[in-house]
Length: 251
Image (cartoon, rainbow, N blue to C red; front, side, top):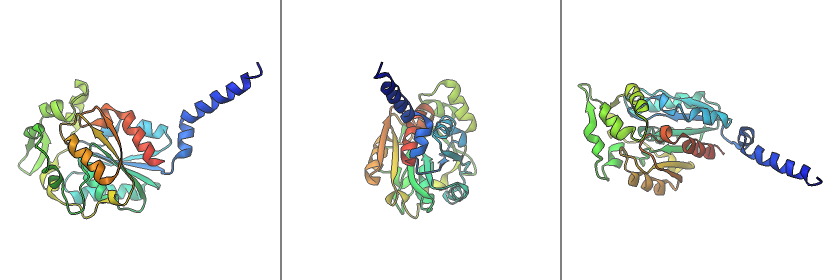
């Protein structure tokens, strides 16, 4: 009986260590700004947002126009400007190019790349991707008469959203944006990951961005990494692992 109070206290301490209030107390960042990729929109973060809010973080998911690197960076910079700092800046896929440029903002304290491109200064998405074998998924890209790219519904199911239930794949296809093909050849002027702590989610079953490319970027950025057995949309297939890494970046 004399040991019961001590055991109860230990149990309470263990519980507190895992509850949202305890996590929030360790956070250095206040807000997470989420940047979607090409062929997507802000809804791609729908499973991650509640987990971040539960951890005590404010969240802003941008809705980028995908018309150019400059316009996406401008949209993202406005979100950073409006956010309570410090900020964790997160990008998926093409969004990694955007945060590499926009991450220079003083309010941004750390970067998280989720199955994303992280080009060096003076390099574009095409410059980075061209060093690796072309993915089979490229054959499912469709360019319209204005030069904007989308992925066919079959390509979404087979490659982009592989691993998700069919009903989720159809939703991803329905909300996908179109990326101006010219954006893929626009170089970033600097690489924020060279100056700020970076964290990267490597999707080991990705059929859009080669996992080897993702791992090489981890080495270049000296980033903290987590690998998930996921296709390209890791934030939809493995939201907890993605959210956990973002929370670590916020700490």
